[in-house]
Image (cartoon, rainbow, N blue to C red; front, side, top):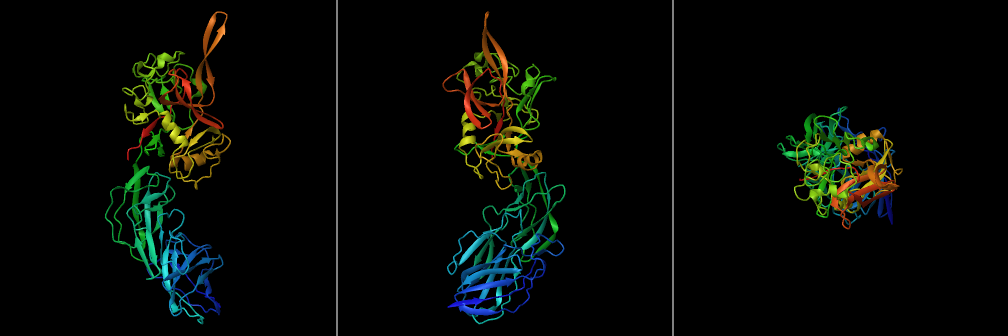
Length: 540
C-alpha cells in the first residue's frame, strides 16, 4: 500500500528579536503507501533568499534550499525548494500519532551519510560564511502525523543569531574569527539542535574593503567571550592578524545590529615576502618567496640590493654594463667569502673564480653562508644583514615543483600575466575555486592568460609566485686564426640559481631552467649570469 500526503505550509524565516511565525494552510491527501510525498509551500512573493536585510534581519528561501525531516526518532527524508515557492521531496515511513520535525541547516551538507529510517543524528559545520549565511532553524509540526490528516502547520524557530561585524583590514582574503561555536548536531531521537565547537571554532567571513566594512554572520548560542589573544582573528591565509574583541552572549534568534569591531591589520609575514607558504621537504618545512627577483643597484651611492618592485620585473639584456644587474654569476654576493670573483657585477669565463669559499665542493649555504646573496641587507627585505633570506637548494626546488601536496593538487602552471610569459607557483593552500587554471603541473606559456586586474586582485593577495623568464648571459668560446676567444652572449628563457653544487661536475652548479612547455633542473657553469629568487623559512 502506498500512502501519499500533500502538505502546504506557508513559511518565512524572520531573523529578528521575535520568533518566526508560520501561516496554516489546508492540504489534500491520498494515502496509498509507505512513502509520503510532501509539498511545502513557502509564503514568499519571489521565493528569493536575501543574504542580509539589516532593517528586518530577514532571510528568505531560494531554489535548492533543503529541509531535513525527522519522525519517530529517525531521519525520514529531505525536502528541496523548487524555485516556485514549494519544498518538494519524499519521506519514508513517518510515525503515526507523532509530529513531523523540520530542520533547516543553512544549506550546509551534513558531515554524515543520512539513511532514511536509520540515521538518528547528523551534524553540520557552519564555518564558511563567505558566500551565504547558514541560518539554522527548527520546528515540529503543530499536529501529529496521521495518514488521514488534511492539515499540517509549523512554527519554524531560529536556533542562531544574526550578528554584524565592522571589519578593518588591508587583506582581500576572507577573515576568520576563532573560538566560536560553529557546529550544530541534530538528534532526531530527542528532536534537539545542539551547538558545539569544531576544531579551533572558526567562523570565516568576507574581508572588509574600501567600499564596505560591514559583514554579517550567523553565530550559534554560546556564553559571552572575553577578548582573545593576538591571532584570534586573522585573514584566511594568515598574512594579517588581529585580536578577537569581547563577544556578548549569543542567544537563539538574537539580532545584533550595533556592529562589533574587528581590526585585522598586523602583518604576519616577513618584510619583502609574498604571503604564500610553500612546502620544501618531506618534514613539512615551509618557506615564503621574496616578492620579486633580486636586483643589485650599482649606479647609485651607496650601492644596494633590493627585490624587484613587481614579480614580472627584470632588466634582461639591458644590464650588460657595469651599473646594475639581476643576472649574476654564482656566489657573487659581494662578500669576500674566499672566491676570486665575488662582486655582484663580476663577469668572466673562469669557473674557478666563482668557487664558493674558494673550494669547488662548497655550496652557498656552507661555511659562513656569506656566499649566498641572501646574506646581504636587502633594502625592501628588512634591510638587515643575515636576516634569513637564502637561495633554495636544488632538492627544495625539486620537492616544491614535483612532490609537495597542496589543497588544490596544483603546484605550478605556465602562462602569461598581462602578456608576460612565465612560470606560476601556487602556494600550498591555493583555493582552486577562486580561479580556474589549465594544465596543472604542466602546459606551456599559452595554457593560461591572466589579466593584470586578476593578478592584482586574486593571485597576488593569495600568495602566488610568478617567475619571469629573465634570460641569462653565457660565455661562448670561438676560434679564429689567432686562437681561441670568448664572447658573452644573451639567451632567452628562465634560469634560476640554486645554492647546490652539481654532483658530477664541480665546474657546474644546479639551476632551475624553464621555457614554454619545459621546467627542469640542470647543471650550469658558474660563470653564467642567471636570476636569483630568494626564500625565507617560515617559523610558526
